[in-house]
Image (cartoon, rainbow over all chains, first blue to last red):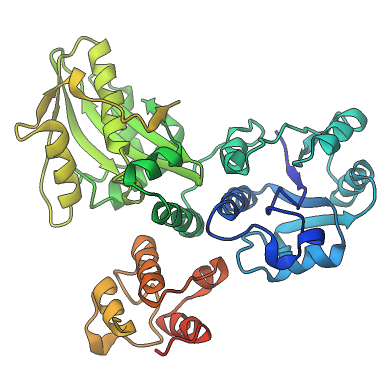
Length: 345
Length: 76
């Protein structure tokens, strides 16, 4: 477990070198490549909100760097988010030792992120206790890379306010990317959507209960369940409880889909299917049902059936159900396909 | 060009006379995260402007949004 991320600035938190190119010319706008850096900052901000300490270790004129941090209108990370900073022309290894002292934490609880291979090599050589992973060459991959690091426990956020901050920033970047794409298909392909499906996994009961209570639009049958009720279904061999989390290059959506399925030999029945409104229209429902259908197929079922109860608000769910199951609300399991722009992990 | 109040009415389902500057997300049931984003996106399209992240995250009330538009020389 790591406690602290120590960050370089130029080409790590923003694109370009502020000391050379100037405040006006660094890449930190909503369009690419700036959007990748904004998304990365938001992902770091989410870690900060979960208690990870952030610090700066940068070779820069402090006044240039601080001007960006204090006044750039698209900086997601502000001065208050950094517990300590070394912005100077001193050796970064020495800076790192000082940061550990100032923060009073062990070097072995620190992770160093820097785009320069030379700086990383120096850190690994002189301070091997510090975790210094390779950073992807393409900043568009920074956010996914951060999510892939094994040093921080995942823990789903349920705090609405914090989720809202993330949603505002990442959805805005997605909308901008969509605006600049030539087609919907190109946009979806470039999103790099990844989905992970869990079956009878009790690690996020609170979030699942919250979804069953709050989801109205994409909900095939509104049926709020408590954590305990969900857990009982998970332990019941006659049922399977699925949930999914999704991630794309702008950020982590967290847990966004839930399904309660009654198992039977010939035909599995989806008693309740719901999805957070922030992801619909991007093929997540197709991929989620394909994963469920594939599990049903593995256990010998031929068909998947769904129960749909119309409400005042669930028209979006009806449209998808009709598209995927047809009017009879039942379809062969082999018919469900994962869209090629969604990868299952 | 659609005027500001027309967009407020459309996105937040308010009666035109209810679109007061002091209103915030707590006062307006339809002001959820998604609708707010769509509203901002529409303002950007309608007035051909762009909100910075600070502006978008910082606006708490309809009046705040108007103030931001005025800094971009939009009369509202």
